[in-house]
Image (tube, rainbow, N blue to C red; front, side):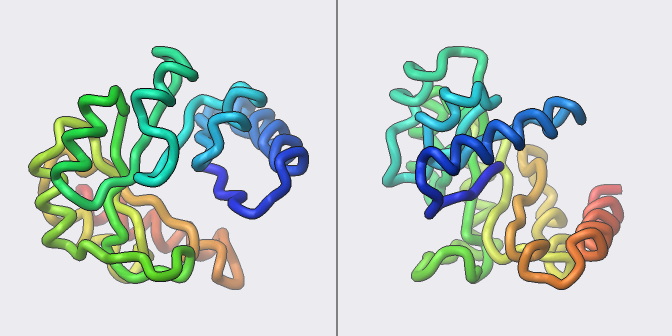
Length: 176
């Protein structure tokens, strides 16, 4: 998922087009964060929207039935609305505090559990997750919790490869 929140539209589109080429070459879907226009312009595989963005039912109308739509949810009501609106998955969090979003209300492990149990959709935990706490997140044992999304766990570190390897090892151990 591309998180270029502050990029100018033209620059963002060029980066997205470059990312699409790389992702397609490796069989990896590319989702654009918040920007339906960019997702359409680069023919991304989908988009992830927050509660203050265009509602998922409008995104579905714009992108059509074959694109992936994710919605950020903190509550059981938001999770239900995402299902009604035609989302494919939800991102629940922030589970823990994070530097990528200022003043972000955290839901904690208990909030993540509540949303997972209420959701008819696959759930990805987001917010403050890294190799030291990912096992606790995945260890809640709810079948529709399918994974974690991370940003600062990788990109605020000196070596992305090293951090990704540690996170991968933690997740493999937690899910086996």
